[in-house]
Image (cartoon, each protein chain N blue to C red):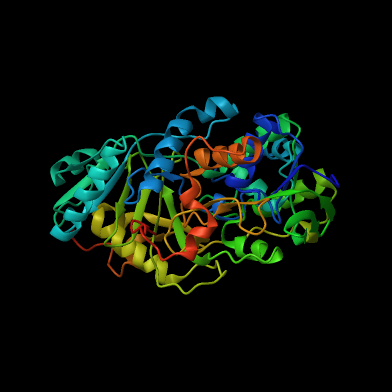
Amino acid sequence: MKDKAEVVVIGGGVNGLGVAYWLAKKGLDDVVVLEKSYLGSGASGRNTGGVRQQWASKYNIILARESVKMFEKLSDELNFNIMFRQTGYLILIWDEEELEQFKKNVKLQNSLGVPSKIITPEEAKEIVPPLNIKNIIAATFCKKDGVLHPLALVWGYERALKRMGIEINTFTEVKDIKVENGEIKEVVTNRGNIKTNIVVNATGPHAPIIGKMVGVDIPITPYRHEIMVSEPLQPILDPMILSFKHGLYVTQTNRGEIIGGISTDEKPGYDIRGTVQFAERFSRAIVEIIPQMKYVNMLRQWAGLYDMTPDAQPIIGPTEGVHEMIQINGFSGHGVMLNPISVKLVAELIVDGKTSIDISPLSLDRFKEPMEVKEKLVVG
Amino acid sequence: MVKDKKIVCRCEDITEEEIIEAIHEGYTDIESLKRYVGFATGPCQGKTCLYHVIRILARETGKSIEEIGITVPRQPIKPVPFAVFAGQSEEEEEE
């Protein structure tokens, strides 16, 4: 392991690896990535890989829109198939109140260049023929939304970093960060120390623990979110289906498994064991929405953590007091779908000192003020 | 028997050669290897293949079987129809 580096990236998920990738691409290749377990062991490897632009808050829409443009080219760029397919997101609408809200959302999305639209239940059934449309009054659909294989994104970045000669240290846990007069001096790990002046905190739900090492409070709360796959089936479900009424999201993988999650009653914490409550709740919802699923076998369930911020939007940018710690965390469950543009912007911030999209409203110091906008469209 | 015809994971049709190749690519811990290759993710949930893979991994890396450990088992262990978890009988007519 190197004992000094220009930049130390903490976190071997899509955001840590992606930042290192963009730094190297921009010519800054004296970078070390540290991961306390294996790559993608956290939320990066535990999610559905959904890529949605249909958000209610401006920054989530912009980051998702720019990320979609980059995902479209990323398999070629990384020379590794991340299995991104644009089969859309279909959001089910159950009552007038929801419909009013989604009309506003679609209007905002359209004004920012996202081609979402309100459709009828019959049109929704054309997109997903086995869908039970008995109780839905409408749906929204954005055909440019999609799904990818999140671990393939991890492996794609990993291979690119290896080609570029960037050191990745797995099973290497950061124990402390030494700071003098607000300047970062050294990162202490279980495998030795690394002298550095710049640290990227890409540790998702563990970001507050890293923050604490430099005396900074990061308001992220970890919540368990569970997910499952079924046995593989013939293709029957192209898009990702969302139902905010159920807290449900579900699609089908390229291997044919039905994959999805649903909200459960969670208290904050780092426990990621599976629960029967989840299995029951998901099963009740899936047989209601796609009745023929009742005959399908659930194969396995697992869980990961959402890194929730108070406004459900990510924290990206420098840190007041310890300017050379760059935050890229708090994606509140959406760190994969907002990944490509977020990691590029962080690399711009470090190399160029400015970003091509103004993301200053996403910096950590926004939490000093009362929240103006809270993202409501969090699911699962 | 030639290596590339030796099926280690019968659910997902994974050969010994594919597993060895992945280990040599650097997926040398059991959880990474499982995700990269896909063994233990089919209907049997690793009941058939996991111990074969552990042995191959031990042989290729020189690690002990204790050091390698096992993958985290996933519920419901055996495949279960959604209708059962939903509290419905499989024979119930659709509404």
